Image (cartoon, rainbow, N blue to C red):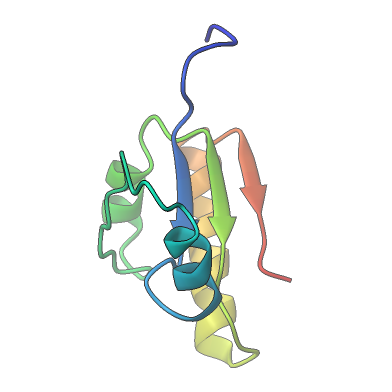
Length: 89
């Protein structure tokens, strides 16, 4: 990929909490798509992660469901060959 080409970045959990603040910080909102996913559905995660360069996890909480969702997302990122994964911790 050429240096000047745009890279696709995903903010997981970008519709609430910390993620919403990060997404809203982009005042232009140009090129921003919001996609609802089921973090328990590995196949649908793989579809949504095709061509993604970086995933930034914005999950908040220490409850088991947040941790499981992040691990499911990480597994899908590895299989989809996402180059960078930034965990929420």
